[in-house]
Structure formats: C-alpha cells, structure tokens
Length: 184
View 1 (cartoon, rainbow, N blue to C red):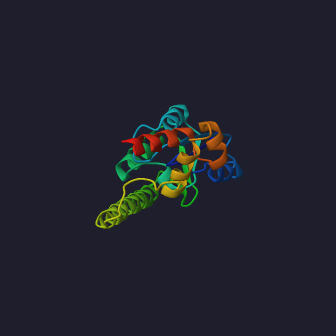
View 2: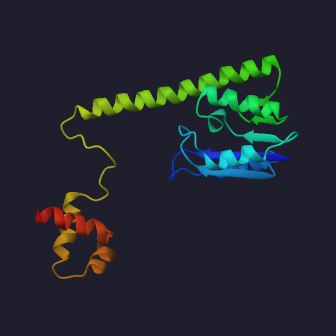
C-alpha cells in the first residue's frame, strides 16, 4: 500500500497542493494535518506510522514535512526500515536502506533542520530589531484604523450593533471591546 502524508504548519496554510502531488504519484491513502512540525505530537502522523507494515511505502512531498529534527528523522526512518517500510521523499527521491541511502538521508535531514533553525533565528532577529522602534506593537496589526472604529462607535448612538456591523464590517465583539476601551 502507498500512503501519503501532508502537513502544513499553520491553520491559514493550505494542504491541497501537497495532497494533489501525493495523489499524482499514486498514494492510495493520504493522512493530512495542520500542525506545527516543531511539536512531537502530530496525531495523524502517529496514526499513519502505526498503520504502516512491511511492503508499504510512505510518501511525503518534502523532508521537512517528515520530521521535526534530524534525530527524530533518523529514529523514524530506522524504525520504518526495521519494519520493511519504504520511504519516498519526493524532493529527494526514494530513501534506500543502504549505507549510502542512510547517509544521504541524514545529511538532508540535517540541512532541513538547519534551514528551519535559520528561519526561527532570522524571525527572532527581526522581532528584536522591530522592538527597538517606538511604535512597535507585538501581534497582528489592527484590521481597522482608529478612525474607522471611532466612526463605528459613533454610529452605535443611533444604530444597533448588528446594523453597525453590517454597515462597517466591524464585528460586534470588536465594537464592544473598543467601546469599553474608550469608556475606561
């Protein structure tokens, strides 16, 4: 049996491209999840690993979808090889249970972990630089400007929350929060 595994790190990312790629290479059953790769607990991946048996093939689109670290990748691949399961990483090829195959897999796993670590490091550096600015605010930027929210609050004097929400697109919960903030 050929199994596929697709994963994206955040709820806003889409799995569809990975799923279509896995289908196109013959995956009969595909497990998918939206779960960060930095966490060891990936329920769908664990379930998939428990189903794999001798003669099966596990297909992933990229190595970074497979494991969260080099040691995790090596442990997982050793277990799969011991059980007679083949591993096919589409952007690198079939991982063979040979000394050369294991070496290439280990090197590529190290590069994938290094790349992920560099992304985290650059993100942290960017945040540190941003924190030095006077106007820095942690988190997602406001969807509506202060002026838009003030206008919506003004509308509440003559309209219901639902009417203001329909007119401005600003949700009732946002309006309530803004109104409380103005009152304090």
